[in-house]
Length: 161
Image (cartoon, rainbow, N blue to C red):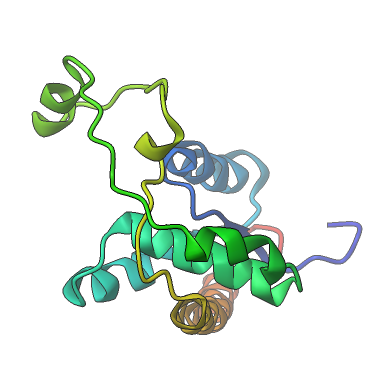
């Protein structure tokens, strides 16, 4: 707070971070009376992409390539965009049963494509539009946080913003 921050947003698109980040936001408020917001852009853009017939691997690659484009590093993606590869099916005993039954566990990848399988038609322009949509939602969250702060002030709650 000494640096002048008045709104804190924790942003991560990586699903396994979610529990830790939500806990951090909660503990900032409970123990330090600091308001923060956790935001995962996937929550905004995932459903739209699935309705269009794409999957999470396509979405992840498209937004990662878009991010590289924004950073001026899109030349790094050229060889991957041209790559044509069949998806490998790698059976991991027990894993599908755990997730199908609602369980969650750590997973050690034996092949990179288990984490992010190759997809054709990766579209960094579409990924950029999706990132902008998520950014617009983040801006709206900032306005909503301001409303919440004002409400708390009116009610006389102590916290740091």
